[in-house]
Image (tube, rainbow, N blue to C red):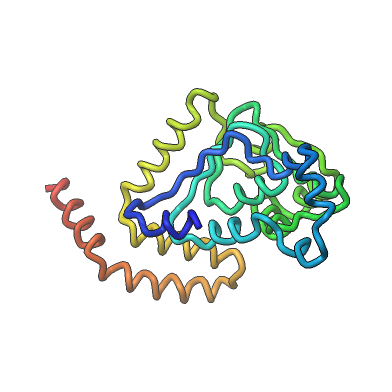
Amino acid sequence: ELLPELEKLGFGIVAFACTTCNGMSGALDPKIQQEVIDRDLHKALEPIVQGLADQLERMPKPTIAAINGVCMGGGLEVALGCDLRICVPHARFATPEGKLGIIPGDGGAWLLQRAIGYQRAAEMSFTGEMIDAQTALSYGLVSRVVAPDALMDTARDLAARIAANPGPALRMAKRLLRQAQTSRLDETLQMSAALQALAHHTPEHDQAIADFFAQRG
């Protein structure tokens, strides 16, 4: 229920702070273990955070995940739903579901390979092993690694720099980038032309052009 409420706000960007993005941590709780065991087949087919990752991926506004700890399982799938991910040096990432005899059921099979490519996603999924922050950076799983005390300031600064741009153009750019992942070039060019025509008729574009010439003159 959080994401629809965030979408109603006037902000141009949404940032998520993840102290730990550990969707598997509940497996350590005996009560949750028993609850999982007692789930019938119908419930087993209802992944807990599947809707959240999907909603994040579909949200028109840019999203940032600031990761300050272990990020694995469902937590990683939620972070993958965000447009940008930054983390600290001690962050760790994994898709350990296979070790428990299950699969990444909340979008990881779709999201992870789009972030880091099929072979690396397959290796992470098949082995269930953790990767460190520098490996995540080299894979493209995160865009930067920053000191722990700079994590939230970095996320806020990045959010502010993005939000300084016209909102309609940001939302159109995100839509275009997301659709381009699964579209042909000609389809992307057609959508680009349509969105560009719309962008030219927004008040934000008019104001940006006026500001540009005012600064030059």
